Length: 208
Image (tube, helix red, strand yellow):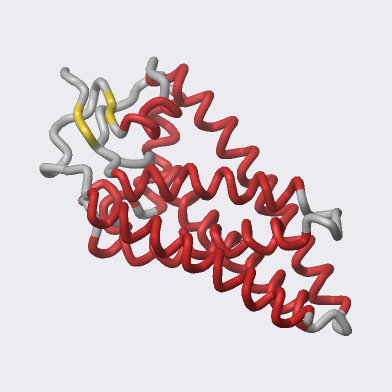
């Protein structure tokens, strides 16, 4: 089969922005000097989550929650198939991957919200501790996601990270006439920029 487009621009921009934002947030977490970077990374991540939830209902078919969220029995059948060395051509996430997407969105939003609350109210130490615990859970999930992606790349004999860069898979059937959606990608980019600017403005105003 030829390479078919399954991941549109908004999905790919959101994915890699989230990777960068979580990485920056982790790297700047312990430095007071990099506090604005940490807050900006959190705002960018939260902006991606808000857009991704919206896009999960109105976006391209492979990006919609209804397309990749499966029942427990379907998830189990998929696990058994992979254990037996069988896999089928697909146009979206695996069933387990779909669960990971929802878990990732939930953890990112919870981490961002508790981080913002802890920043504005430093008298409640439990908020900072909860934020740190959620951040550690997010990093653990991200690590599991990376490991699963590498493993599935071997199982399916293709470069899945490259697919998230190009948007195409070599063995995917036609994915419901998926297009790049450049206008939506521009809207997502603008939304991320606005969220980061607003977070920095609020942080500097609060500090003053």
